[in-house]
Length: 434
Image 1 (cartoon, rainbow, N blue to C red):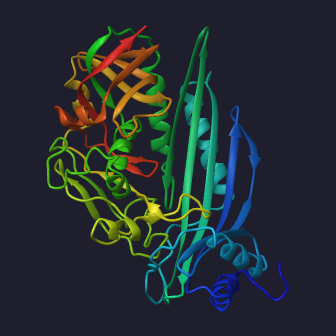
Image 2 (spheres, rainbow, N blue to C red):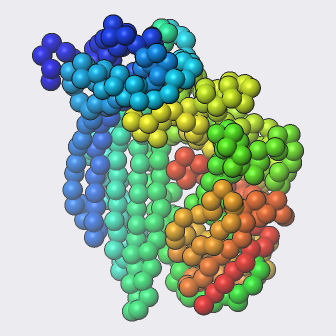
Image 3 (cartoon, rainbow, N blue to C red):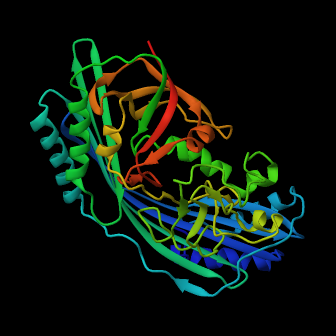
């Protein structure tokens, strides 16, 4: 701790010192976090941890040239300002564009949970899974993460909010002779974890895998569970970036107002939905509910302040930093896919012969949309029912093509990371089985 300087005053000190040192404009982004993870390994409580961090990023402009410096913990502000100013001398001038505003403290999100509750949840998961399958080996991680974000600048903006998230991740390993099966799932929530739902999902997948099945190679209907469907939406998220539009790397650069994918798909963002909600971006611009694809029609690209201006508009509230040491860039904080009307069971019953994909190995499709992935956990669907687990199987296709063909969304939407998605039935993809 620097004498006479508290954590709460560091941001103001940096801003004031930057302006006195010759910067025409300056901005400070500060993040405080506290984490309490609980780990279970081999069916037993393994480790308790606690960590806290304070990160502060100063961005300033000297003669129009931007400079960025980052520090961690309570530090002397002068070296940070000196570093940012030195870096600015190496950069080309750019227009200074900061969010104007006043001081505003947004409501905190989420509720903290004591470590004893995290331990109890973890033990409950293991007890229920092993009651159904005593031979499996379980691993569980439960965590309560508390983060405070604050941004202030020389245009009068000073906004902040607190964010508490709970996460639970569980895996079950099942060894039967030469056959090794690993099933995993997780949750991220604001106020409480739904342990019963997590256990039910894991046990269901173990039950489906009790028998082995083979499938013939060819073009088959494929159902992606909500957990696996994020591979499809990741490509669309990239195509919707305003930065990619400027770079002409998005295949949808000239597609505004056109039907680009199936009318069954509506893709949007909601700052008040789910565990990845937030009231403002890393430039201090308020977030807002935005529909990017409305019943298959491309309606909007997401932008930060710089990209919004380059596209002849303004920021959509999507200027985020990949890390404190990075400049803002267009990013999504959450993605929601409007669910369909039929249940997962009804989707399953509609497939005569196909594949259910729940876990994949490796990365998904890039901006081109082409993918060829190994199925880590998948099942053979025969006459509307799951008849067993498939192994040594790959699925390939193109995301844009698959989502433009006949498809159907389930009504079982759930959060998978920052994506709220239902299961997806794609009419036909290339399946190769060894």
